[in-house]
Image 1: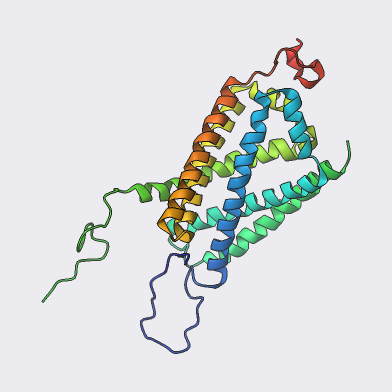
Image 2: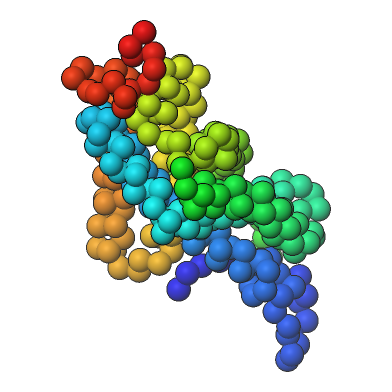
Length: 141
Length: 149
């Protein structure tokens, strides 16, 4: 099974009704942000492979490059780009959160609050990006 | 009475199981260091290419040629290529190690991963540095304006 790094248990007394969630990587916000970080990371990586290949067509001919980049301007691809940017923005902000958990002395204590800050910044950033990008994609020439 | 060594004592007990040094630690540090740099590089890339001006609808051969006429964007894109590929390859390597349980599966997936890494990084680096913004026999309206000057 996938291994999320386990946090040492700080409550030594074994209790029958243990509630998960007191740790960083078992259930709840800590685990789900970890899952989302992996999914967005893999998505971005595969796009990166494709993106270097399509950009490499500038070395073939202007016509070849323009033909491929033209497909990126199609509305379906435009929505895909919005999804890609969303994945990048989440991965970036949650990456900062991970660094704060690792290096800031109070990071582990506030990791849950920081996820909500990440999601808030994500919403603000996407609210700035989406209208402008969709305007470029759907706004005609 | 046996004494229990202090936690985190280097080479405590039967010793570490690998002799690969601190490789995984350097990888862990690299993910964080490159992550910060990539945040700046990629947000800048997205702003210049998708938000500023006409965004995606303005991107064509002339746009790319105009950017790579400047060493600033050549270095920017080169750094982005290398850092993102190393960061992404190391991330996917971790995921393969976590989910592929059979030795053979892990080996095949990681060989494919490392092969893609080499192909994409070498290809991308060559393209950035051997790019000709004004290829001969191309229609002038597809080329950046400085080609005709």
